[in-house]
Image (tube, rainbow, N blue to C red; front, side, top):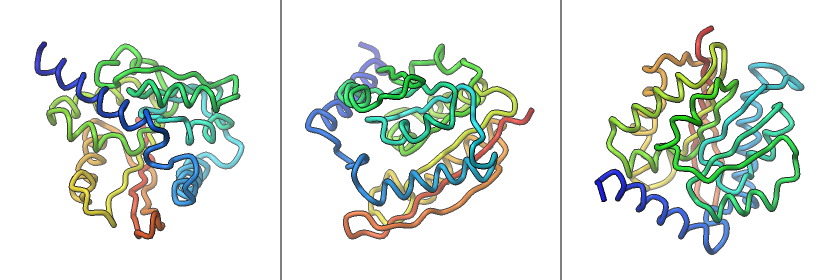
Length: 215
């Protein structure tokens, strides 16, 4: 097994184990998560206005589809991708919208899927784990592939916890580095805001960025 194959296997095992016993992060039920989803949708609506729809949307790291289901009414088609098969199984069970489909895949090995001329890419609370597991060059190349796979005029929505936690993966300076990485590929920031809320008694901040690939 190559080093890359070993990392891929470790990533799959880690996330499948987290989801085997249910919703590890309480993404479906926690009020903080629901409020953050509302803030993410508000960012999309502020850019296009309520009622405006996207064509093809991709959500990377969709987990059990908690945000995917909220996104579906705003899009013609949504594809949710996650490495954890138990999470995708849960998403399929809970999603009734006909315009949503899910795929079990490691986005680090999904270049063919990324090259889809997407109108919207949602990348929330995932890149911090990729930066932990994979070399920085590989994460940078993924950012480039996402840029190339977004149609001119298409949007990128990033959302990442970056304050209120001691988790070294979520330090503000490294989260902002990830967001800057997408700017360096060519995305232009349209709006950026800091969402604040309380989860499990802890005050948390999340950086939300809406960007565009120039037409």
